[in-house]
Image 1 (cartoon, rainbow, N blue to C red):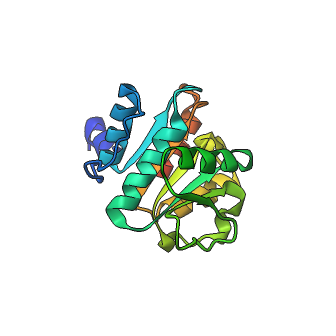
Image 2 (cartoon, rainbow, N blue to C red):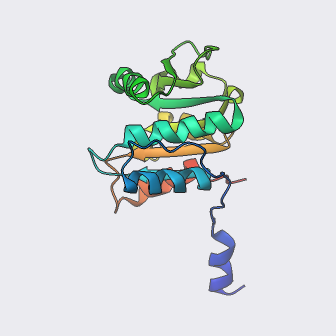
Length: 185
């Protein structure tokens, strides 16, 4: 086998495993609409956008579209300090989100917000999608948290990673983020 064939064999090409968005609120800026449309159509993607560009709104719109398409729960993982803010932002934009730490998604709200340290409480079978806010948590190549998140995500069809602190030249972080988005089976 020549080198080009070897590299081609190792390539993981993403697919459009998503759908056409059904809801893009008018409050979004054009660049946000484009990113969210792209993320929903892809099904698995990452939005690495700088601070202040509206990642919370974008991830809530993606999650709400997954809810509307599947009529199932979406898990939105955040750092502990961010979970209350995410639920408050959801209410501002008409997205029903609720904090949950015991692993039992409530019947009313379809967007379930939890912190990363509670992931072990949840059953992946309960969710159509997972959004990882501050996904730079995945950058530790051999960390136990990264391993648990990646294993959980492998069973989920729709996945979105969001962070403002992605290190563009950190090959470990790019690799661990990619691993969380693709099926390696």
